[in-house]
Image 1 (cartoon, rainbow, N blue to C red):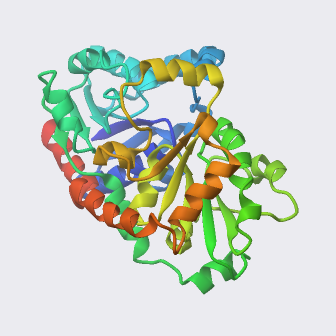
Image 2 (cartoon, helix red, strand yellow; image 1 turned 90 degrees about the horizontal axis):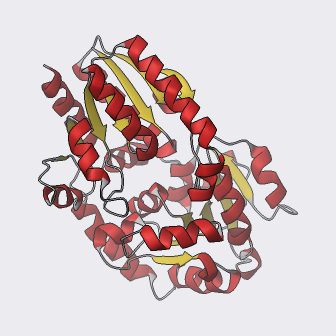
Length: 372
């Protein structure tokens, strides 16, 4: 069968790649065309457009780039119509994907949505459109099944694909000495910095994260470079060797670090699944944040806290994200800190809530069952 997959950011590329791997095992003649990234391409998908050209962060930024977004939607529709897949698989990225879903439904092609948009956080009215244009929804967060049930929509909870992705990576983790030697790092404990994958995120978060370096002279700060970005983006923020940037080794970095500063998003959950103590950081433009505060209907911005329905990891948002607060909260989760042991115990509970292994395999089988 022919599958057309659309993902708009790095996490979607990861989950799409793992799904492709499982679909190929169950459907050896499968063909894949996608909007995604290097990981899906490595699994044999033909990439029409890379997600680095699709990701726009914040309300104002979306408006400023509206012409590009609308052009991309038009190109995508034409490409799907020409390709005539058996199914279109949409991964999160709702502003783009829901428009595509409506178009694809009109063509009579199956629409699968893998990884629900976070409509439980804001724009809940989107659920009515989803019911009309999506044939099957596969959700990865335990509370999402109950959310959709409130709107009389049955969805499949398949578990979280990060559990499998991280388990596979941990089987081949290097030692600390191997990791530091291979990446020309110092022989000092590591604090990992994950400032996001979009240019706007990195430019906003990284300077603040790096501002706390002098408060932790016994540690080295290492930035996880986003796969969609170049070193030149990070270089202006690095002064006198105050930090290192490594690319393509984020999971190794999380495994070898003592704590992390993480921009909100999927990375907060990835960090927790490595049982690495973290402080969640977010700062956007004042206008975008003011709009979001009025619209968003959840108590937390990190997936860890949303899943647990309580504050497990500290969230430093907007004005709270400053050097003084970073120093205080980071000190609490480093070795000897007052929050470290409790945080790691909470991570065990989090992993239990996520439903165990096999999300990609379950999803692939359910998709094939719906096509045959």
